[in-house]
Length: 478
Image (cartoon, rainbow, N blue to C red; front, side):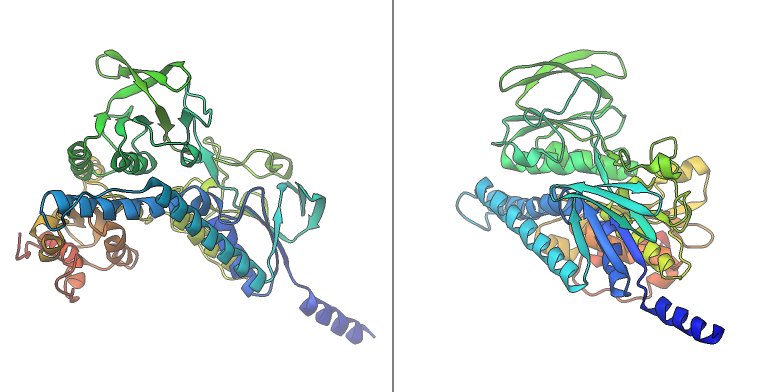
């Protein structure tokens, strides 16, 4: 009898599908959902808005749909005016761009929905709250309660505001709402010079806005290596963008269709007042951790308000995990999807850890910027022994042929081990070129080994190759 009972229990266990509830359908949430569903788990994915999260709907994809075409337009315009390769006046259709952007979002959203259906993932539109091994859902279709074995929090983030500037979705907007403004503003103020601020400044500059970027810190885009920042500054100024580093901004008044702002120098307290048609606040994002019931179930937050996790992305509460912008790592879509892979494998019994030390970052535009690892300023502060290798796109045959000669590749190499400590690119295809260096750094490849690989000619990748050779003092074209 006991043997028969054990056999029945074993069969019941085999038939039981582990239940997982994922809150948030952005790159972290849907990636985990698909991975676990493919492994045979019972997956429910909940989001209060839409599949794809910020990245697909108001972030990465919509901006790139604009930036890629705007960069093509700018290159065409420059070729027309400077090189006389094309004749006639180059114009851009804002209505077409908006239509194209909407179509791209729609196609990718439909693709996600089909992916959910194919893998039998239950997508629920509604608000979620955690109650121990249950998730409570409230939405337009009513309330529900789901029992679950594992919970993954992937609720993402939202734009931060700053004192005196309250979002009104009209004259003072975040990156989420700037898509909905009725027309291209004549004068646009961008407060914050991080990747979001720089990308939107580039978009509206090409569309015809007179753009001002105000940055409270000393350098424009302060996350960059200083030399790259200086190159970016020259590029922005050449395009007529007004830059105000060391500047605090204060809201003064709002009229029917204008906003008045005051600029205060953080160096000498000098003040000036200016009027704008639109203000974009681009000072970063804050994690969406409210109203999830985290405190009641024992999920701890760090002092900055992010969810604490261990190296496997498990929170302080067993069987509750967190990925993406709610964790204290760079708030990037590829951070979220990489963490999601780690969580999925841990739930499936494979012990995996997330390494947040080597995450590439990109700023898209004309030219692009990409970087990973240490800046030269950080290495100097640590008194590290390093060598610098550089190569200008201006000296590249491919760049000369294409007419895209702005920028450089800069490699920081450990003087003793010859491993790459940091890599920084500003120039054409930077967002693609960085990955050779990402793979090298993640696999501890030394510079002398990388330069033994053949780089096709003529390609932009040769600029990376020459910068690596320059670290060793072997570059031919420097």
